Length: 148
View 1: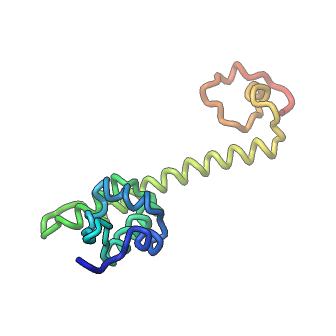
View 2 (view 1 turned 180 degrees about the vertical axis):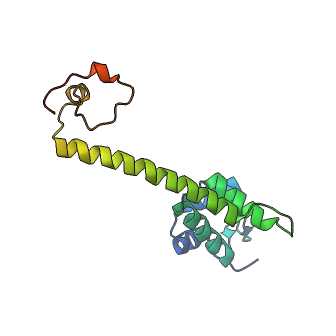
């Protein structure tokens, strides 16, 4: 192969650095490129596409291990029932929904703490009106009194 893109060109076109490109090669996410007669890596345009796909999947919340599984499933599907993007995207969506629910709960508690003027976590936790969810504290250990 006498023509192709060098590492820096591929990395720049995909919006990653050369170290990321080489890391993905070591992880097996990218095929090992051909070499020039001088030993330089030479990539095809498909390497740029592959890098963009990997980065897009990461932005959607997939880990590199999950990306590798998706890429592998796509390469070896050949009519076999292999869990592909649909199943994995649905599972990732459920994870995202759970995280959103957790973050919504956290946000609600923080807004309540800010609105209540809580300034001392220990003092606030001991008051009955404390908006922060200290569920492991027994209600009888909280003393009534003015809020924070």
